[in-house]
Length: 346
Image (cartoon, rainbow, N blue to C red; front, side, top):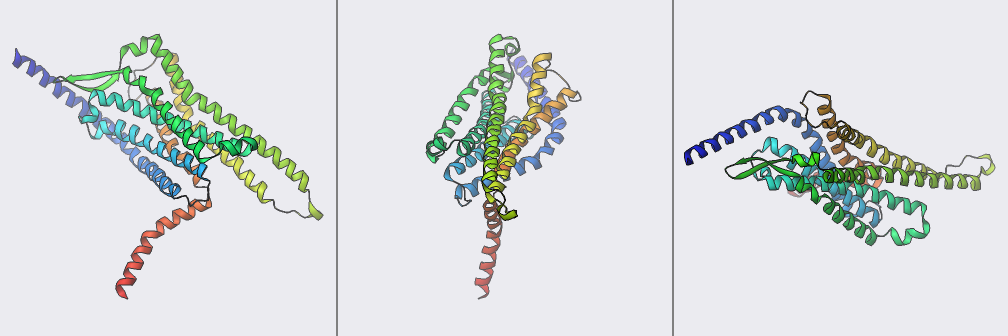
């Protein structure tokens, strides 16, 4: 009896190995395409974290806190979702990451980092709205201490919000009494409780952030336009000469920056939201790799992951002092080498 059980377990193990190998061969080429994008995203966020942490970009400590937090959150999205979740199961199968409890925990990490990243964008947008449009509240809210409290609160609440996802998964295979992989429980698709949880989850992230980012940007842009009209009326044309107003030029750039953020945020997330809505309406969860829903899902994931670097790029790379710090960082190793060679020759 024992030998029969062991034989069956070995057969399951071999079948599981073949299943993993087939998945790897089918998806390895596909995820190989992500490598370049992943490396680029990680480099962008790492560079942003290092440069902003130095505090030499001419930004306030409050803004620097938000931008560093956003860059860290975006970097964690790439690490958890791409490296630990999607690529690990293909390039490193049957490691500790594939054990069912770790697999389920990794799902929580993926959701939590995404939620935190999205809501940090919202809180930073609100901070800029207050700084530009609310003079009385600005002195109290736009401070380094408030930024730290907001970032900490968003991180804690975002993590707690994602814990229930751990209980929506069950082991995919049991091999030698060890649970491997994780898959959604059948009750997740039939339970009204889980349906309500999923609907609420996606409404809070990213549907509500869509609304808030648009709202704060529209209100901020309206305030800037109104202030600009008043300023033009007060200045007029002095002796018929057309003087360039630097403050109005800066406000125009602020409007472009704000709408770039909201536009990129919406465009890069809209595919994911539309596909989720399609799944819930049609109750379609099973499809092959050649079906349009599969292609749409993959495209939505890719665009959502791409959003993990665009916010930092748009906010930070438009700053002249940041570019100067970036150039100095590139030149620093060369300067060290040149100095070393000169010292050796002297």
